[in-house]
Amino acid sequence: MSKAGGFIGIPSGKAMFDTCRQCHSDSVDRYENSIMGKAYLDNKGGPSCVTCHKAHHNSMPVVPKVCESCHKDTAGFDQIDPMSVNKTTITTLSRIRIELAEQKAKGNKPPLIPEFPEELGAFQIGFVAFGAVLVLFIIGYITYILLEKRR
Image (cartoon, rainbow, N blue to C red; front, side, top):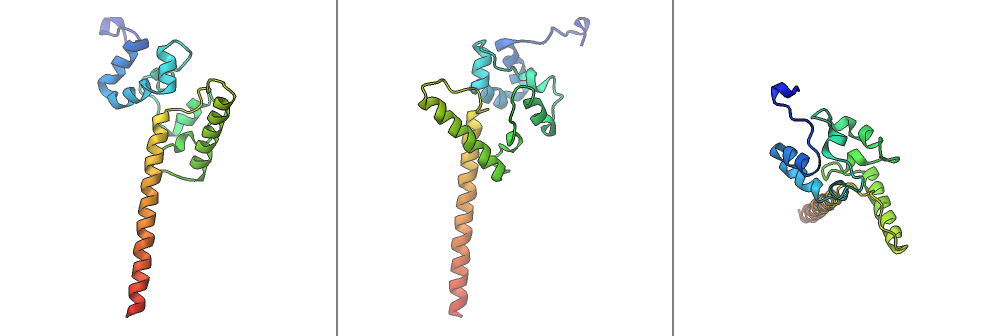
């Protein structure tokens, strides 16, 4: 990464988002609209893309360790995925929502704890979809039992 080789340095601010967006447009759009992304763009202390991801050196197993550099409690950070719903995920998300509600009730501006609020929406959609599949399974099972009794 030399200047002679065309390296112009690590971009910052909006230029960093533009650079990352060339390959990661969905992720950048999501981050730009998150609490941390807005804090970064408003110079209020939010992390940039490279704060957590360096230059393509992070993989999913180390993400919680990276989060620990700024966050004391990272339980469940690696679980916020609609395809990996478990008790830890639900507990963590409930704790975040309770904290936000308490802060708002006190008239405080909520802290930067809900990483990627839109991810919570994806989690909720995944959870509802899982619930719908479970309900359909139960209905199918009950129907099967009733039909078996008729034989």
